[in-house]
Length: 239
Image 1 (cartoon, one colour):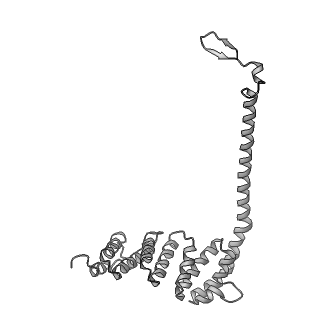
Image 2 (tube, rainbow, N blue to C red):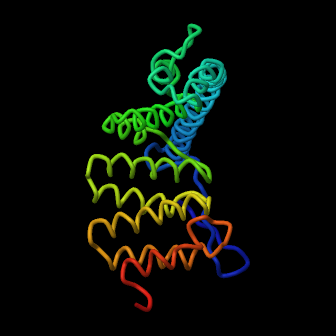
Image 3 (cartoon, rainbow, N blue to C red):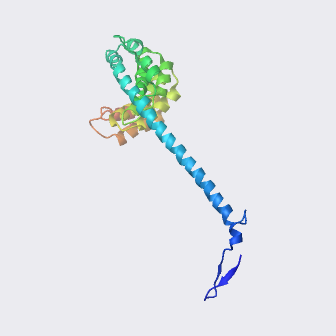
């Protein structure tokens, strides 16, 4: 590569014509490399566009129609559930409608199908089929302020009925901290303390009761006004 001098002492490079066409180390190789990278970049952009378009199509053509169909199908099962007809709500609520189990099979990926898993878990809990209750409740994807609390609380009840008390305590602990509904959280926190007390772990019971008294100091919460009695019974406070 030739060099020419400027009016200053700095030397600037001059590109020879031969170097432009000289192959591997020249501008031609650099241009080919950049063009290759541009092609890869365009392929990546095209792939991302296909993914976005595919997800949009799946949502519009599959998810939204499934949600609509599931909501329409579930009202009869919910009606049976409200009448405490739990077996019918699960399997055959009448009128040719699917129960919660059929809705889960057909529309399990929709929001309504997901909610049907919660209903199914509660139905099985009421029917005393605790393994099935745990199965569907665990599979239920809970969100919002209320449902995470009721999910973990119901799981605590199911494990407690199975006398798997360690697991029940874990679920009640989660219920007391999940979501944002002080009355329900206080209810399961009291259950946590009572189960500790039942198992003879007085210190853990008192800690749960003390937490209820401290964190849920609200007269409108039904568990709070009597919490001193629970603390005293477990051996806390002034005896």
